[in-house]
Length: 316
Length: 294
Image (tube, rainbow over all chains, first blue to last red; front, side, top):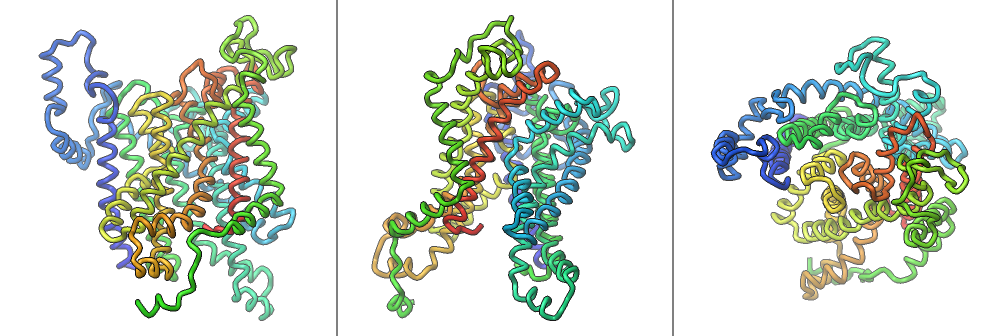
């Protein structure tokens, strides 16, 4: 367990380095001079040169990368061109909103996904299985940004029950735990939960069907164990994989929240990315993506280690 | 090693035609998969023959006619925010949307398979180098990587296609690598090597025929994701540019109309949903017909 964790951590280091190279490269694959968005149109040649030196763009690429990485490791991701505030401040404020939304969505998705998955797996090939599997296919096929729009049409535009956009009353940009803010979260969280719901339902269905077909289940039934007792055995066997899938899904939602946040104007990392792209605010784009990718890699690492702790059969 | 190769049963390098006939027969009996295939064929044909079947010009509209409801005379599915005929735009939109959804997976299938097969067959340091590089791209959530690349490269159809191809190469390369690595140590490959066949010949004759099937099934399961992502990029303003009809972009420009003509505004998304669920059902059917287990 300890050895595996250690190996897994050591293996993650080069991946993290690679991820930072990709993030660094983003500024350099983008067309045009990286200075273009901060320079006034009539900037003199001297001013251009001074800024170039100031931002370090006059150095070689490897030099720039090492300087950039060194600053990033100390928590300095540069300054947003659009707002003039440090990128780290902007990203951290947005991350908490996205984390809140993605966590709630993952929990909803996990509960519904497990329910549909267990029903489908237990009553394999029955009408119940068909219905539960249809819900799973719906979850993995529906364009979630469209589902968000449809929910807004029904529950905001037509019925007027729930707010259509924002994180709280009066354009609140910080999510808080109270009834008013909770109402704002319902639609985006349900929309977001559909993807993990579909994936978890499919995984759990396959797991349950596989476990039920194993000989120890026949053994348990032959010994006269109640159906509930058998069910508990199935849960115990399916839990590590289902939980692992849930953890990975949380990472996908964190990183992939841009579409849903755009639909609901949710003030998280997705909105931040959106504005960074359209204002050509490259430091902000780079910093946000770096933080989200790091989150994803570390989360996957934790999931792997936790899974091997939960399931002693895994000896990799 | 030499002993082992003497009495191995010779596995045919290319599966006989009977295998694919079986897969085809099983797939045809799968009603859900066939319905999905029918939907996809219909939509593709509609997109190809858009100039012949679309009742109106998809780019021309009269502002006086804007945002008419579904069922308006002369505009079966209503009109959009610039008074353009929705039915015509949805038919034409299939061209760009299907192209943007399918092309990245096809390209990624070609490049990802090549990368994965080379890594899997070469083994050793080559494998480590290639697969660790692939892992770096795999370490990004797919939506994030697509948005990051096309955001940095700038909006446009070509950049969106390029970004999506880069997103889908790593998962396909991983599958290709694992299938090839498993196959590499099988007895008939050893036999071919022992009988003096070169690496290129072995890959061409023995490896390709056995690994492309599973990779293909996996790739088809990615088309639905690709459709959603591609239209998502256009929805964000990173893909196709106006006034071209594309479902994701149409959904974006109609967002402001959800209080006026909500169901007209929701139509383009319903098209994306229909295509993506059809691809998923067809891919599921193909997988069970080929009995490929993931």
